[in-house]
Length: 286
Image (tube, rainbow, N blue to C red; front, side, top):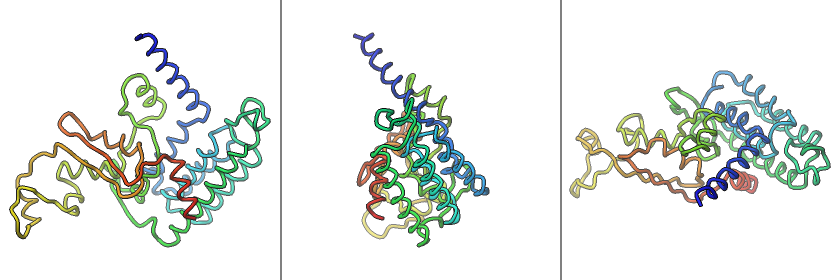
């Protein structure tokens, strides 16, 4: 029975790693993570160049991989609208003329999975471009690009806007899959929600000053928040982090980075979505 279970899990792992290799997920992950965590904060030109290099390569990724990368670029970098348009057009032209690296050859007519876009690919591309149009409108209304947060000890802009947008692997899983993921995808960065929870639990950072602090042991009457913060506060053992709006498994997994044997973290959101469902919502809003 144990051998049977091991064979099942080995088969699942092999299938996952085959898809990871076929889509070149490590390259997309590394670039998306670098964009989201401020690696390109002082070099928008290099960010554009690296994104263009990847979206113009027909041997890398599926349609949704490239659409997601362009959306992350538009959200994380304070790039000019003309640069975003150029990157989006380059992606669209490359996909329409050279296809995707992991198409079904029977459906697309190409050898070894390479070829023109399938009907489903074209629908995904159209949906992604509509989603990008909505994001561009948000940028034009100055709803994006005005906040600064602290990411892994470095000051960066706009990173907190990606907390629910990017579905990335983490290193909190155990066993062989975790080792393979960490080796292939590299270090996981703390999302904005994770940083907020960590700072609140440790009573430090700007969050400790900005977030409302209530103590159930305080008697009824006027609450002196400043005095409460100055009092000795018991360690926080149980955390409930609830996101108003869309949440994702990646955000939940990322929060487990600050959970330990003395602190449990429960995660909730108005709606739990994967990356494709989120893109569909953006496309509908556009």
